[in-house]
Length: 390
Image (cartoon, rainbow, N blue to C red; front, side, top):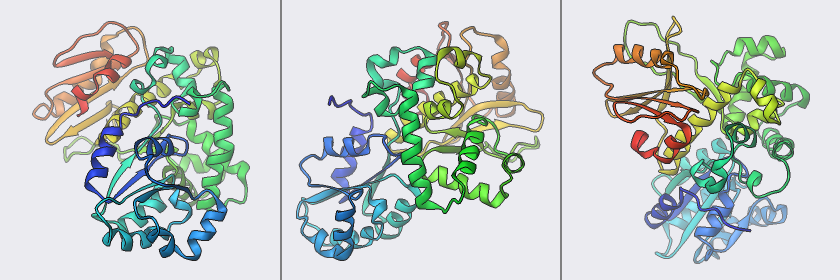
């Protein structure tokens, strides 16, 4: 199988040179194992999806680790989380040529153990599915095709339709992770819940409304949302907040880490449906925001993104903060520029004129301009993303 280079490779190699442990988290099937084995193929590889290996390691973890004189790739370590505590002992006595590469699909369980046991001993990266730049020639797909296919590697390495791949992903990995994290008595109810979440892509999170639609309690909804966050299925984008007189929204916005999975959950599987769906604009927004987050994560950085909205519905899709400077970004799925697209940006700049030097509109059109007010096609933006949110 042809390996598709990942933008995170440079950061992974640099961290591996400076830390005895490299921790790679991210969604299932985002390419963590492939990346680890490509960059560190000289290390022995162990997958803890294997029940026999899990049993062996659990029975004598110290013996297992001390035999690894060169280090190892320890894949899906969330299946043996206690091993991380023993890894600390080995790392503290390590030889200079040892490197342990740890991967895990469950962010919360892995990171809790890592921060407790490996603080100061590990570099941490988050690997998401492909970015537009990583797709290469597939980057030339139409906007609708990208929204339907999404960016999971399996979609581009298989001849099976994206809809079938997303269905299999949902029915195997997602439900498996969910079952490991919480006890769900009614999977049909959870299925209804996650599809309702997909219907709120790009919208403000309102747990009371979800409770009314599902009959679930708000504590249960919050618990299930935490599970979906832990499994890198959804992301809650925080609101931008500054101490100004204007009343601002404090609820987060809900997005999916992969827009193709969101489209699948909405029942969209062809161009006709996508063009007619009222959420197409929200899905486009979701895709562009994830491009920003992928770039930041691939650079080993926090995303530092938020959105602005006040009680009068003045809104900016993204606010990127770098130090004391702010970059407001508006995202539109239209192929035709409309001056009204800039209203939110103008309003935001009127409030924060001292912190804003430039603003940016990202859309699906071909008319572009650069400068203090940049207007870019989303593919152009992805190709020059470092100029804006580095």
